[in-house]
Amino acid sequence: MFDKNSALYKNEKYYLNRLGCFLLYVKNTFPDGTCFKKIHGVSIPFFFSYVKTYKTKRKNWGNEKNVYEHKHTKAKYIVIESYGNEKATFKATDLRDDGRMPEAMKERNWEELLNTIKEVLHLTTTSRFLLINKNNIDDDIDNDDEFFDFWNLLIKDKNAEFYTLQMRCLGITKDDKRITWCPKNSNNPNFRGEMEKEDWKQHFEDLKQAVGDVSDDVHFEDESQEKRIQSGEDLQRIWAARYAEKDSDTWWLQMKVHSNSGYRTEGEQDDGRMHAQPTETQEGSRSNQYREEYLQSAYIGDGNDEKKEEGEERSGSIDKKSESNYFDIRLMLELVKKTEEAATAIKAVPLNLKERSIFNVKGDVVLCDTPGFDDTNGAEVDVANGIGIVRALQDCACVKPVVLISYTAQGNRMSCIKDLARTLVAIIPSIADHLSAFSYVFTKWPQDQVKSIHALIKDILRDMQQKDEADEGYQAILGDIAKKTKRGTIAPDLINDSPNELLEDLSI
View 1 (cartoon, one colour):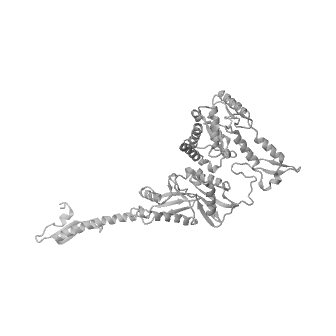
View 2 (cartoon, rainbow, N blue to C red):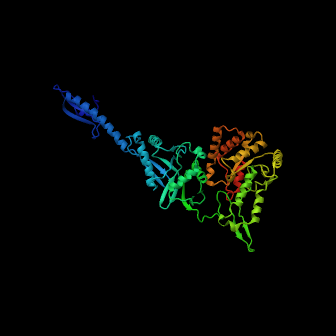
View 3 (tube, rainbow, N blue to C red):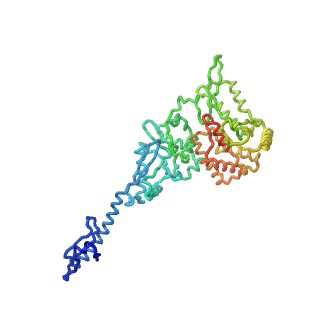
């Protein structure tokens, strides 16, 4: 039974009494600090009863030990990030011993999560928002089933104490109320890809109704006064930017309600347009002075689009409040004349890249502004321009086409690309074989929407493939734009950015 060399065997004689009694040594595994328990004069029937009791207690003690371990396991929780540094935390309730959420409690915990967010962030009870897994922007948590899976995944993750959710919404402050809003049905997985089919005019009315007591003579504006919502089209554009990939700081946009009364456009820059402010001369005649800063760039595109854009920039910016006072017939005739001007020759500008400290390009580089197409001068001018471009290309050692896509001239769902594709296919028949040399520059694009350009192009391309549209040149160019904007979008700030950065990007 025991080792003869043990102290226990030497100090106590182990014997069996003929009367059925014996001295029993049992190894004690209970936590009372001793190694063995000594029992004198125990009968054999009691011995077996003791062994049975011993096994039961040992089993129960093992369970008690597991319960002790569960109680000392750190409780896991969810962190919800909102605007700025504001955060809320949530711990699910009525969980199993292992921390997992029972399926019967998922609906209750989902409602408690939404209520906790509204209480901690001081939101109105009617506020709406979307929740996104910050570590996986494609993982939206839209209902109790998805939250149930999200929580149990956290419990299984031994290395994580908490998971983080990010809120996607518009935050509106009005009086002492704080409201969050997202379009109805935006929790539908197909909503993002089908935004063009949505009735954004109705969404805009829903937004005003959610804010409450909002008249038609108001608009919504962010703190920097760069983003403004005055119509359904504005709302669609602003909401599309909330899907910016990786940049979670843009998923929540904070806005305020402003009145349109007294709203001034003089000297401001709105959606890429330059505004004019009339000034009075000493002779009493009225003249308009335009303060424009720009970066000269080569472009291939539709002549009418650029001229139409220039006309909007110059004529559409006169202060509407005093139009009768500012109207000048001579000025208007000059503006109309300028909008009808068209390039009739290739304008070449040699560039000395070494002076600009750009050394990754060998040889001479000439920046060319090509003539426009579909101009008012007639088909014969278009033909002459096309022939001239082809001859110029044939004399070049290397050609790198740069396509400029203006925000104000993009058209409906990038229709400008379709017209551009037809022009390029006419000049370069096998356009798909040469797209690797193309670069795409997005001009006058709002900075808050630059990161959503790639997603916009992908959505348009996906819709075309589903509808089986046969315009192969259009699809090829869109596919190339989607491929190159995935790595990074070239969208310079024409006023503040250095031209060297753009030239380096185009030289790669």
